[in-house]
Amino acid sequence: LPLILVIPQLLDLRLNSPDYWHYQDFYSKLQNVIPIIDFTKIFFEEDFEGFYISDQYGGHLSKEGNRRVSEEIIKWLKMNLILSE
Image 1 (tube, rainbow, N blue to C red):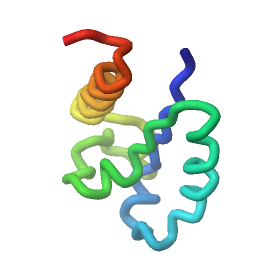
Image 2: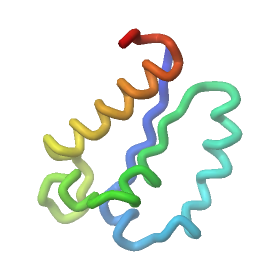
Image 3: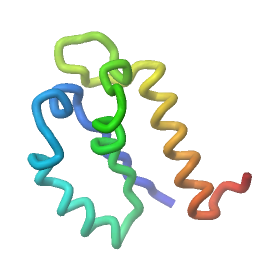
Image 4: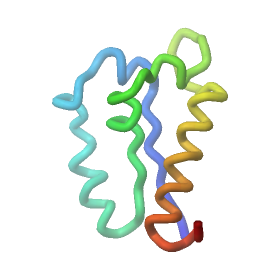
């Protein structure tokens, strides 16, 4: 079962607010065809700075960011009865 993960760049979170995430309409429609976890809103609502390694663009997740992503994947798998408690 494929699962698409949308993981924003650190600069996207710093420079934009939810009002400017125009691609979300695309992903909401695609969600009807293939499951998607969009981390843009998840990260935006948390202290996202620590989720990225320290570099100019914030293109790679840190240990904490990877942990947070794995938590959401496990939660999704349990909610969709793919993984049992």
